Length: 283
Image (cartoon, one colour):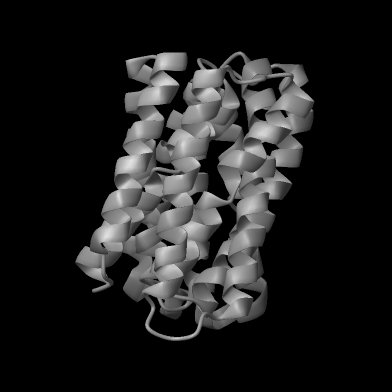
């Protein structure tokens, strides 16, 4: 976990929280993810023209990952449709790091050293703190369907993170891998919207098109940085550091959605920074 890797993943975290906030800000989640998918596909097509084709060994995980990303998008849409941004986003993101730690140990044979493991644990404690405060701070009883969808989203994140860690290392080109991943998974939601809404879709998309397409471009940038980091560092610390997007998401919720940030979130942010320091020491 060099400073350059840390900087790339933290940048990815902020960008990721930003595109999720853009998507959440569009009331109709099918429209939001149609535009995010379309924006991602356009970026993927441009990148594919310049990036090397992924190596043959990368294609099986690439195909599996594309399917997992579609499942993730459907679950995230469901979460955003049922719950507040400050509730579901921290839970969806906070579920992943410890699960990735286990999956990476089992399938990639990456066992973090004591410092990295301590960093993942401390950072995860901060993430859980933000998630619990999101539930408590909503001012009403939690929506259990939204929470269940958020946890399922987190498990999907852990699954595709591990698969992509394997795939991008075999690809020989992180840029080529992200390009083809966007091409393979980006059109699923737009195709669904075209089939189900037919003639209405263009008129519905027009008012939110710029915001949604920007979200798609940001999603490519965010995940491209993460994939590059996965070729330079173990999966578990990268996954934990990536979920500092929860802190960025909490700040966005406070600034733009009028949700409380509060002392518990500040404490959680301190834990997150402490976890990063431990992971750097271990790296």
